[in-house]
Amino acid sequence: MRKRVRRCACIHEPDAAAQACRLYDLWNVNAPRVSLPAIRGNAGARCAIFLAVVAACIGACGRVGPEPRTRAPAHTVAPEPRPVRHADFGTAHPGTEARRIADWVMDSGDNSNAPFVVIDKVAASAYVFDRDGKLLGTAPVLLGLAIGDESTPGIGDKPLSAIRTEERTTAAGRYVGELGYNLRGEDVLWVDYDTGLSLHRVLTANPRERRTQRLATPTPLDNRVSYGCINVPVRFFEDVIRPAFHDTKGMVYVLPETRSAQTVFGAYDVDSRAHREAALQTAAVSQSR
Image (cartoon, rainbow, N blue to C red):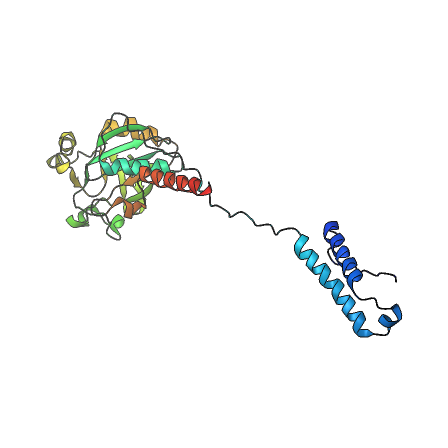
């Protein structure tokens, strides 16, 4: 009797196919002999033989086929921590907030590779940096008479005689500074042109205000006298401000005195940022092992 074996779907796997064929031969040897005419005339017999062969092939595939591959779980790898960048104050001793903001400016690149000035209103001090965060100079400053961090709407269009005492504030904020000229034809560093806020040489037109003497005292308590502008010593303007902003714009950061610097600038502590990123990197490395 001629044997007929249906090729199964796993024929491309020689081991599985060979075993299926051997199982069929074993079944065929042990099964009761049935004549070919009897099989041909018996639909039930033909169906039984077909199902037996299919079952043998499926069984062979299940036992001999390759084990399913499992993909290793993916691990999230934290990026390498960014190098910490600090402002270089040299031998100067700034207040905590002034140092924090200058460090943040350098670490975040907020100055866009431009020179920048940090005005600490609480300490009545100015710090001027080059584009790389190196201190170019520091000096005391005179500020607006009134305490506050906001400008009165329309203040830039008012004559000085119309500005009330409580409106004489030096507004906090982040400004793009640029050298220019005021109505007297004097060169100044415009901080906020629309509100008339500028940084300029100390004005001495009114002797009763004693502005030069106020700059010379060691305390910042008597440095509130202007209508809002930032007054600096003449030599400081000539030797530091003008060269730093010559033919370029820069950033001016006026620190707040009634709010936090984080609220005004969206700043962060540089060292805390570095510690957080290092901790994330360490955790990611441990997880991947």
